[in-house]
Image (tube, rainbow, N blue to C red; front, side, top):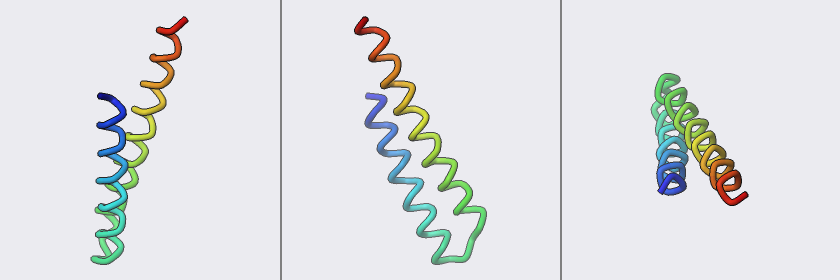
Length: 55
């Protein structure tokens, strides 16, 4: 489930960056970058939790 949320955050963030670039909106681009980073962090934390639970 965490992976799905992470992928959705990355996709939404990438869309926000592209839309912000088209509209010349630095705020929207910043929000998009934060969404992408949040998605990556969630995915890494889920992967680490899964690996530590398997031990």
